[in-house]
Length: 153
Image 1 (cartoon, one colour):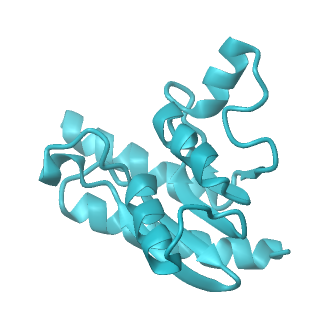
Image 2 (image 1 turned 120 degrees about the horizontal axis):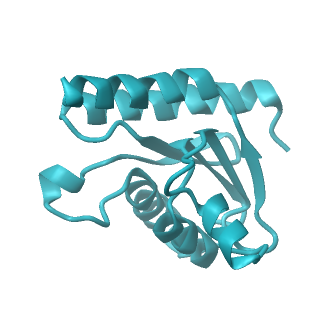
């Protein structure tokens, strides 16, 4: 099992991806997938560039990770993402059977936890998936807040 310091290390890698998104004028969300201490997938939002509303950071990282492994299941892996996954990405995480989801900032409007609460359902993610919230939360939240403050001008 990874230690909290490992979680911070990999979240910093996800933050690097988020900064790449911000530099491309995308919503600054970044993700990495780690398996046995190796980053096997990286991604950041590409929705504007690809004109694809499904091109979220998590989806990019899942695709890279499953390609790396040559299979669709990520049960031995951890997803690190700077913002709480939306229901779409949580659904994709469910199907990958991801072992852990570690996120930085909560998404109080569109995060999967809110959907879980509304549905009174415990398993938007796979029942075996462990969730860790709030890793480098302030840094992750600041990146998002600054991006939207700049947009609002």
